[in-house]
Image (cartoon, rainbow, N blue to C red):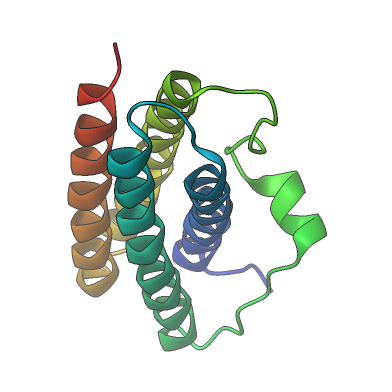
Length: 146
């Protein structure tokens, strides 16, 4: 039986959200430099918000009568988000996260299109809310770059 395309798109959102959560938290721990405090707090705000979003996306999948299936191996093979880099300064972290926000926006745009085509307004509404957050996050991160 073919899997619900809305679920498939939500699984991609979940995968990208988890990878971005992990990367943002790693950068929160490892950021250094003159802007340490403000970036440490910005990254913390963003990864904490992502933690809540991950739960929301997983619950959307459950609401469509599917089990949530995610693994580290699956995450690594499906996400559009690259691993956090080891040797990177604060400006590099910001630029990296701006690119990742753009990647997840692209994933969300695709998922929104799928949910709207399927007539699933509940999922579409949730995805619009996620898009709003990620566009704001991209703007905030980009505004901190030199």
